[in-house]
Length: 386
Image 1: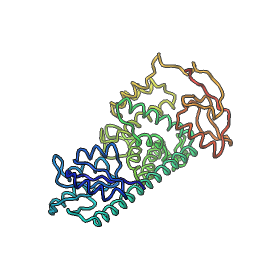
Image 2 (image 1 turned 135 degrees about the vertical axis):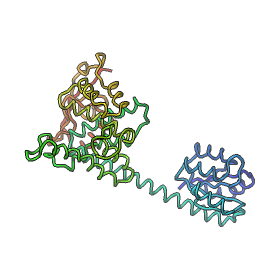
Image 3 (image 1 turned 60 degrees about the vertical axis):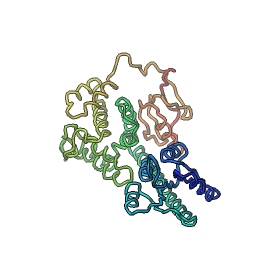
Image 4 (image 1 turned 45 degrees about the horizontal axis):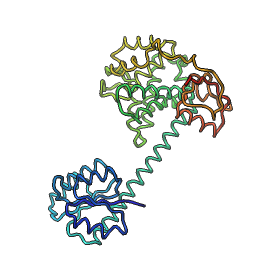
């Protein structure tokens, strides 16, 4: 391991002494002030351990370590001071989340033991974080794979929904959001846990239309119950839970949440899912958006206006008919190609539906599936002119 240590003290003699004693066994940097130390963290980090003196000009040790906590939360923070009053110790622990509080002069064996403990703590933190990241990524990949295999048509729609959500976020000057991306991909995963005949519009005769609607409304709640127990997916779960919630507070779930208290990701999905549903029923984008404008109280006005600006057809919009039709092996498929026929598995199951635009993530998904089970080739596409 190549963990680095940063010592911060306004006394150059103290810094030189630490560096001389420790640099043979540890990678040690020093800084004479809190401000310069923050610059070191920004340009030379990450540091496993930061040790700061309490009494420094302009920025004392508590203020500095509180800033370190914000900038580098995984870094273990320690304090050295020649004035070990109890109030200082309490403030250091409460505000800077100090791992160890040491008093000057600190014997080499004491500081060496404290550094060893701090490095051990840092390794524990980073190992746990890496394990959580790997577990999370594996869980997400599994969920996406389940959705793509059990409902390829729905997965294709989810890919398109994610693309539209990204366009909407850019239009609204929002930063990229992994939570919204994933919520768009998994927005209908609750349907996996409902029998197909109960999700379909033509529900069994014993169910009324209202009862069938209640069952469909249950899908986001099922998705929420599945995802909310997975670490770091709580925000994704909440977006999906509220994706059918109206801006005025009506709709599902039936609670008092309304307006901007509804997650912004859910407000975006509410507009885009309704637009897709209306198009699937035969409405053009223009007529679908017109109907949605007549129910503006259901939608966040900023999101609806963004959808109108982005997706309302214009006469000057490029037409896919201008592209050349061709066949391509999977190895020749490119981002931007448009499928003029669906991609099917070797056993003739639909994997990606007709009309999908090939994105980098869709291409990676198809290639991964082809390695496992194979697909039917060649693929029929239209490739827009350069």
